[in-house]
Image (cartoon, rainbow, N blue to C red; front, top):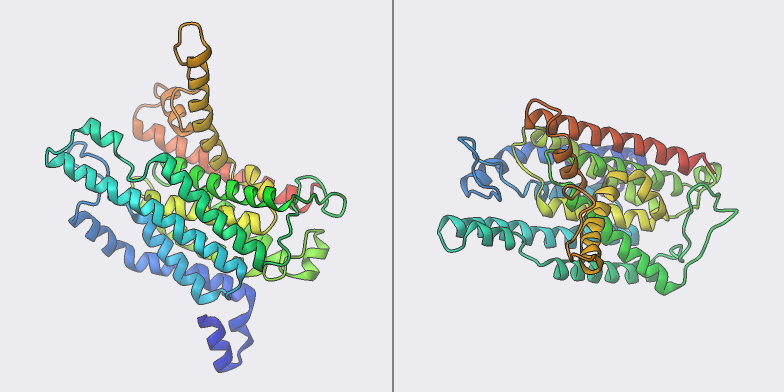
Amino acid sequence: MLSILLFNLTGIQLFQDRLFRAGASSLFAALIVFVFMPGFIAYLRRVDATADFDHGKTPPPPILGGMLVVLAVIIASLTFSKWNAYSVSTLVILIAYAAIGGVDDLMKVRNKRLVALGKITRADYQAKADGISARLRLFLYFLFSLVVAVFAYKFIPGLSGHVTVPFIKPELWFPHLPNWAFIGLICLVIASTANGANFTDGMDSLVSVPLITTALFAGLVAYISGNAILAKYFLIPHIPGGDELTPICTAMVGGLLAYLWYNSPPAEIYMGDAGAIGLGGAVGVMFVLLKIEFFLPIVGLVLVLEMASVVLQISGFKLTKNFSGDKQGRRIFLRAPLHHHYQFKWKDRFPSIQALNSKLIWRFHLVSILALILGLLVFFKLR
């Protein structure tokens, strides 16, 4: 990596300092997005890389913005993070999951063009909006997660199936899962986080802030747990080599902050599945590798609630349809994911849809920030 190469050439200790590499990674990822995003947006507009239909005189923003963020994170991580099993596992999941989401994005663009050519109807487009079926997508999620889980289990000595439980000191209770259960947990956490991020990506900037807060939490835990003295002071497990996840986390934060410059309402570009699924999967694998997977429902509260609302909506509808006397399904929410529920619930409380969306987005962002504070408090102090 560049920082290590500079250290070897110059002997300047700064280039291998963990905090320097973390900060430089964040700024480098942000710089990449700031430099290339305007041209990327212009190119996507020229090729009409959009998934929505025109509303009025304003053409819809293009998708695939998250693909540039993913590339920025990869480049910054490779530049400022050292290669080890932790960093490799995370980047493999990031690339694999972003590729799955990228296929969906490209197929959405293709199917919209087929509507314009009259080859399929808008109803057909809604049915074929995703290039990969839900079942195939979940299969690929778990397949890639399984490969990475087996790799990590083999090459990370400290990844022994132990999990950290909220509110309990590891020295008092540090439960150990058998190999099959722990590998299954890894796959479930990664796939669920990716799905949660994908469901959250439904309004301008909505998914970016919870991804930033979860990445910040993971980066701080990685930095502290990678230092034996700090880990002992905070009574958390020492994870040698886990601190190499910190530059990846900060790269995500920097890239997403720069992305928000263009995605903040009104959006100039959308995240798309490539970014949401890829970055969500990366967050999930880092939480597992750092033994903080059970803190994800706290820190990533918005992501978890968005995914849970979809699961409850679908399962509740099917159960009530099968077991109710009139065979009519009942819905728990007005619409799912959760942000759509509140769009319908609050639609008469605001003078315009723009005012409603703005209020809704900011409230979700505030929940994410408060969830980060709560997660830090629980992880480091309330035990």
